[in-house]
Image (cartoon, rainbow, N blue to C red; front, side, top):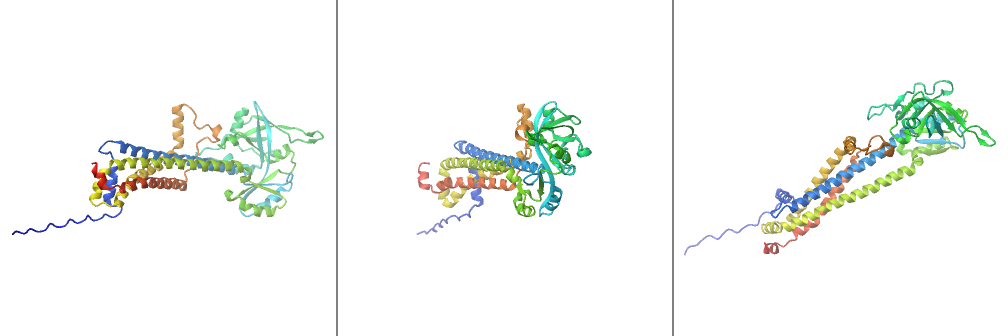
Length: 440
């Protein structure tokens, strides 16, 4: 009687650790074309493209909106003061008051100011705002008399400030924005007649004040609101023209940190308890509140678009699970656990989201960094001005990319991509291999 050795028992395959190379390899292969066609692969490409475009658009839009806000704020605080000190009437002892205010914590500049609307007439007519300032104070405003650090272009587009504020009673030269000059049809050396309703008081009311000045300089801030409405006059001449005598209308202060302007007001108010204080945030509150609200709503809408784009992953993965039902059954019979199957399909969907997010972030950043060149190219192709400065206030598209904002966008996109993969991956893990193989 012959005896034969008993067959060695088949040992169960060793379980692989989570997210092992085996799982990554299968997940990567499942993203390709299937044996039954190209449907799943096409849907994966659509999901990838949706996430990429959504992330890129969100980065571009938020960067442009932040650029608008930063540029507006920079110009506003660069041309105007941060805190305005006013009394019940004209301020006669302004020199003494300025010396006192300069000692306040955080105050970097204090200057006297007269500001009033006038009617300007030359070859044409228009209404403008005249700001009466001292020569040294105007020369210190880089946006008017200096050079743009980004482009290297001088803000003085014609004439010069060499004679501004020089001569008897400050001379007769004024400076106007380039859009005012274009409207009036004047250049350096031309005459402009200014008419104000702040003339001498009579029993019938104030008389009109009228005087002809010479255009000494034409400047370009880069903001049509300033270039089209603001002009500068020597302070002494403004005192005479607007009937202030030796007094001024208000004192303009600049502080070290304009964004924290309210923290300076208590100390300043203690120095001038009988005066009224108004800061730049109060003067422009409705405008910047509207800008902030618009930015927040736009962020929310675009984040929802990213979420919708990420939900395309669900469609692709559900179709992938249906197509790979037989493969799942084979893997289960070979010893793959439910957790392993779930991780495989989780990785398949997550790869779409991760790669799409990275591509969108890179594409959005490149677009923002080259936005002016792209705008000029599209304007030339379409034969139209896509960014008219008289509508948007700026002569170039301002865009400022904040890495914190980019991080929020990338994080949200990855989160939605991961969440979208959970349900299809869970369904794949719950498949019964016996039922799946019965119809194969």
